[in-house]
Figure 1 (cartoon, rainbow, N blue to C red):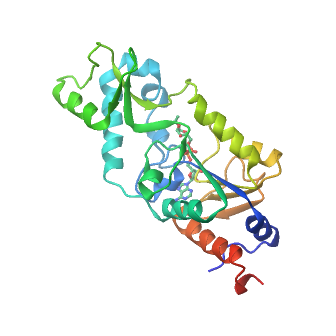
Figure 2 (cartoon, helix red, strand yellow; figure 1 turned 90 degrees about the horizontal axis):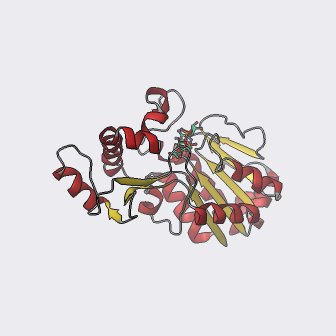
Length: 259
Ligand code: OAD
């Protein structure tokens, strides 16, 4: 089934040198990982301030650590879906492709994508808030299991936290700088499964647009940026992205079906 029917979209995709994709929680929804906003979203039932801030971590370390361990458990039992695999394929065939994600679940990497720009960190990484010592998830699990209060400490005595960006914290400098740069250079920019409500990530499609990129949004609903994008493809990314990939392949191979 052909999903790109718009002539301009076809031309822009066909001629694109640099394609950039920004993903959010929606791309992992079909793998079974809850999103943050919307009816079934995590922030509907839980308070971000009580779970996803440095203050909360200091005040209630055991509860916050337990919540992250719970999320890791969910992620551990999931697999990348067809949306993740389609982007891995796109990386292989596009002249230049950059993948920026707000997700901390590592599913893009598990699908085979490389050089993923992680804006909000990775939930399977940990570090000491005192001496910055890094801890792999296996090392953290070991400490977690052996600590009766489930409050793992570093050998220096500091608390160990997940390597994720909490509310009020700055994004990793190198990642956001690279994300801004590639967004400015994008010929086509894909905004996938994100509500586009959290800045600075939400600025990236707008920056791309200011630099004459063609913006395609893939989402099950309309979002904060839907009125600004060039093409809104409504539906689950696990279904839309493989179709988009099919179209892209036909376009760059100059296949009959698009003439
Ligand atoms: P949100 O939960 O805000 O938005 C998820 C988006 O995915 C919504 O627009 C849904 O309509 C859409 N969606 C749901 N299922 C989908 C599917 N199968 N296919 C396509 N789209 C689908 O998630 P983010 O935009 O990623 O920050 O949220 C941004 C940040 O807010 C997160 O990284 C997190 C959160 O607080 C931190 O943890 C720092």
